[in-house]
Length: 344
Image 1 (cartoon, helix red, strand yellow):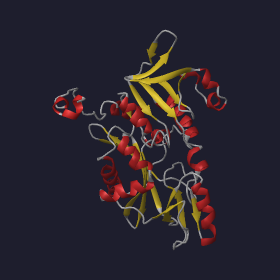
Image 2: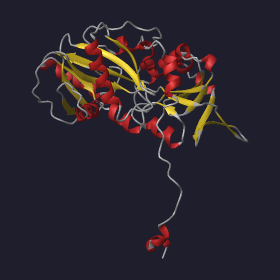
Image 3: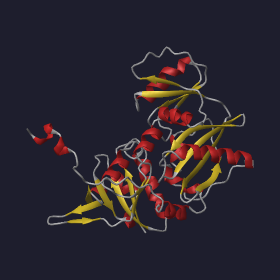
Image 4: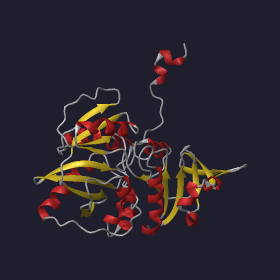
């Protein structure tokens, strides 16, 4: 199987996507084809044997073959012809905007390119921390209480401190701050509003248990181990992602069978309605024995390969269980019965 690794995009998480893409060379046995989307949203075919971080930071990738999107795939254009890039399936590994907000999903679906990754609705829901909370509550999954604040809104809000301030539409812990008193709130909001026009404010609960669980649905649900992230107050950008080239399996959390089942059941409630065809990671809180969703990661860093013993096998299986779009037959049954459509 030939897998097209689609990565990059116009996003604050652009560099993280490059790190994740490079990591795939060490965890996937399939033949890989690298398709890079730069900050200008131009696509390039990157030689698999020459992919490294410097190729992108130096701009050397611009010497690689430029691609265009057409029905059925990515194409190299020459003076006299076009040649399709041979791949069996694409793997969307573009983090943040473009990759996780629905743009990439829309492009791949529109041009009928089979791909692993969140579809449009799943992208829109999970990209927004606010929409994620509304979605979760609709399907019986608990969330911490929260407030939202617009950039143009008054900052005279009553809060019980400490709180955590997050840009609504951003991942990788970018722009997140812990606020312990009112004097620090304005600065935290200024930081968050550098990245988004809306923020979510939640209580910061010292010592709350956090667990990560990844998985997907093929013939049955395929779950990863459950990881308890080792952290201080929270995982900032450096701590969370500069080691996200991880390709070695991490240690499993010490949990009771009952809690493992609770986390898996909650994962299924979130996955089932929208996330078919995706491998996602859910970040959960556990407080007083109850499970709360923190975030849904529809394109997790390095595809959460480090949580699986059989990551390569799961990706291969998932490729056979992608959602199929409804076929719409080409027909014009009624248009000629409408007088205004006849040009009269």
